[in-house]
Length: 148
Image (tube, rainbow, N blue to C red; front, top):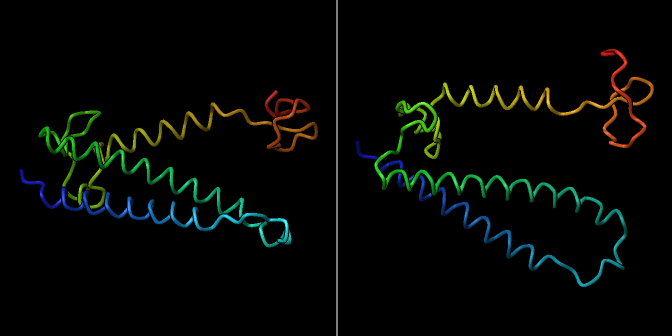
């Protein structure tokens, strides 16, 4: 099967992400001030939030670039469009939407359900001494009184 269309989409997406990352690096380089001394706290108050958002987006971009490189490698090896988990062919409709996918819809759903389930039941839920949910990890928390 000829995957030239998907190869072009993958290469275009990779180039787009790399351009965005370069522009972000240039922006960060030019954005830094020598001193925040003369700024009012409200002028720089949104900066930590923006930095956190930028880090999350950069992490997502890095993950997508890795998936794109894996997909391109699979094309060269001749096993593109094959699910890594079960070995079934990935439907062309799915490759149209996510050309860098490595799982068929069934395995993707199973992985999502598994990670959602394990996250839900493996993350400790902490409650304060009043039985209210507490995000603070300090030692003054106790197990949920409703569960004991």
